[in-house]
Length: 56
Image 1: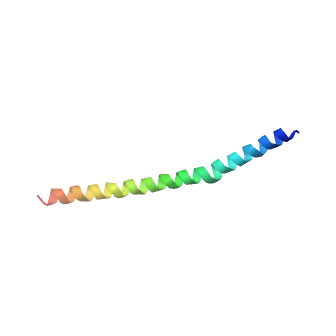
Image 2: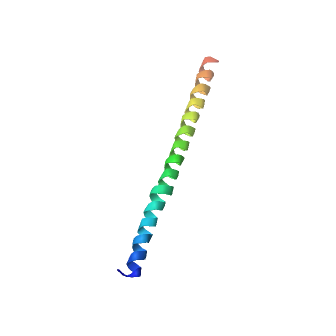
Image 3: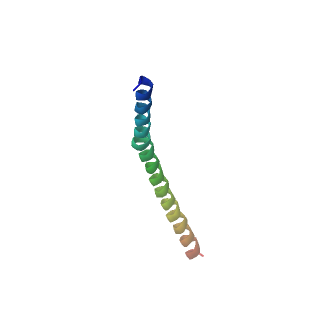
């Protein structure tokens, strides 16, 4: 095996580690944050709508 092949294999392993170890957990964390923010916004809109209808 030449050193170029070894470096290519090590680079591929490092790229897989970065994708599965760092990028995917960050994306899932961001998705959870957006989901929680959307649920909070939905609850606020629902409460404001209900209070607005009952106050009339």
